[in-house]
Length: 87
Image (cartoon, rainbow, N blue to C red; front, side, top):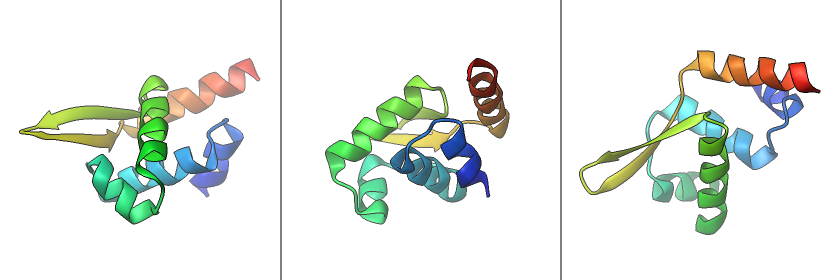
């Protein structure tokens, strides 16, 4: 259900896949996301960067690892409302 909402808000299929995965799984590395989604590593990083730019995910360091996690759901709602307002 929320996948359709995200697509209507302007996210790509790959953005929705990764955002949804982070939302369900919790923090993950790019390598973990690459393995689960079967996307090419470069594509995963491209999608992660685009989601960070939209402030839908956050990037943190835990030791030597870089983890990505979905932002709080209120951020998603703000994003969707912002997109509705300007479309």
